[in-house]
Length: 264
Image (cartoon, rainbow, N blue to C red; front, side, top):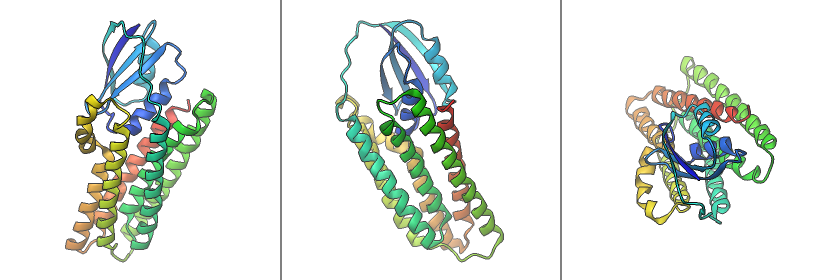
């Protein structure tokens, strides 16, 4: 058995972990994958050569780079029986906040909240692909990934069009208080998701939870919407809301292209 360590510089949250798992699924030489998200490290236990695994990791464009390969005597790995239950939990939380943020975003006229809801939906897609395709064929997983990726791109493009319409139009200011309050709850929800997922790791890694939260793109986006809400209030302008919305839509499209790579 060989043990190869990769550095994944763009592995910021569990969504990237699921993307990597789906990409490497089906490679028979892999015995186990061990993820260290805070330190952006992936340890692959495998037999034979590393070439196919390394190529797959690089193709994801997550900044993957092989650090070392060495032999190991470890042949048994503790499987987490609760992994599927944990994925269902974070899927439910993300999808619930997609509905909450989309609804409140439309009512409060906040592009930032609408965009953040799509980011939540994007995470739901990743967890959903992992769940619904469990035990399925690689072809089935690729078909689901393709549908999810194109759906995200369509929603993000609609979002960009709405940003342009509001930028050049004379729109009413978004409700800054709704933006801030809902984003705070979304921030808490993301923290809970990361905590739940961290429970699937060994207890020795539990102290890394705080680091995971602060390095998560989702948390940064939530903070961005909160700041935008404050600026909307003090500047009496909808431009901060439009700016954060544009940034998040771009991130959603970037995530969609990552998912589409899995369908190739």
